[in-house]
Length: 616
Image (tube, rainbow, N blue to C red):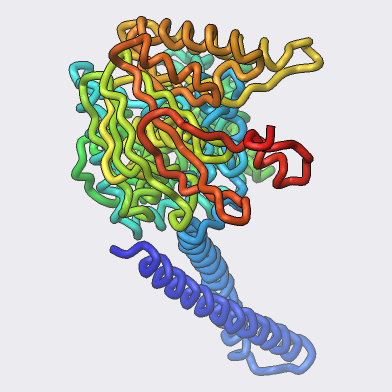
């Protein structure tokens, strides 16, 4: 399936549906107005014009027709809203292909943290970030599932404890692959989520009630009385004389009911109020759950997620339990009618009976409600990754291995548009190996390190990567690339870098090997101390079984390969100097340390008067 052709066809279809609904809305609005005016005219004719009695039937028919038109009109508006949401789904897909995704509003900034081992350095969250590119979730649960997956390396799973790490990753990939071609299903999930979001329902207050401890403890005999006494009222009210009882005996039963209701009012009132105010936010998720359950799943990972939605609460599943709750809530909402609340409600012990049923629902579903919403969020996160996979068929599916290593061919940065992305081959063959990257300014050293890190983040959540092949093992990751000093806290740039390096070193602890990425290591100090310190840090990391890449301008650090006979690989980028003195870059990685530099040329290029080395 070609992504662009699919999105363009979907956009055309959604736009056509939108135009149909807009025309229908206009026609229905006009028809409603005509019907209403006709009904009013006939009413006027009956009152003042002495029209014959059969005109009354016409008025009734017009009123009935008007009611039908109101319902149909509302459905047309709902269909229009869904067509608009579908149109936006396909337009977002085209924006990702065209490279205009950086205008998407959702950036995942709530998950950004300078204290995280790698997300700040690798632009995982924030403007022009990986999250901004990937995110197609519509609910707060999907948003959280995707954000936490990128933070921790994998979508939360309570699968078999015997599953190996590489086996787990293969299940993640299988899930993403399956959903990548299910464009229509992903569209429906996005549409229902966007329609839901436009209503801004907040399920959190309801979830807090549903998962909280029950406060309503009603003895069994009171539960039976709450059902039996309303029947006894009816029996004594209409059959007292036949039973030989006073006609007013039903009043005594009502007084007993009122006494029991008053005894438990302090317990039942909070439950009634909480559900009445917040259950709507929960109930509006029903269409999303129905979409989630609408198709069978072939992959084990998706099958378990959908199984969580279809199971629980005595195997009734989320949809059945939502219907059950909606029925109870509809009974609760009957209290809004003042006549019912003041006269019929007390006789029927309405509040107590509703509270008892709500508590039964809570006890039955308490253990499953969080799982239902968590599973929905994970499905949304998988759908986001699947959309990325569908958009980029040229990306490779990573090959997870049991040992610590990383090897890639034609590796590029996934946040760089395809037309400008340059691929390079890299390899870290095992624990205790390091690649030292030297090169000119702006030649691509930092981009290479970030490409390694961002692609590893993608690989660890089961997504394809920007490479022709990508093999990796079970590793943690830590980076020191973007250093932030603090005038307010009195932290210098160099000291901030030292603190960040210390965090990287501290994370290099067996048994999980660490992949480290260090950009321009110790560039805040003099050349002599930088070489001594950097070589010590790198050797210390290698001794702990870590593997990684280090970029530097200092060739003294590249000389580490002569001291450490195994495990250090030197590679470099270089610039090309044209006849007119200008420089270009091909961003191609070459073996060995760099043999040239361009700092003085860059200074001259922007107008700073400095001599070139050949002039000194």
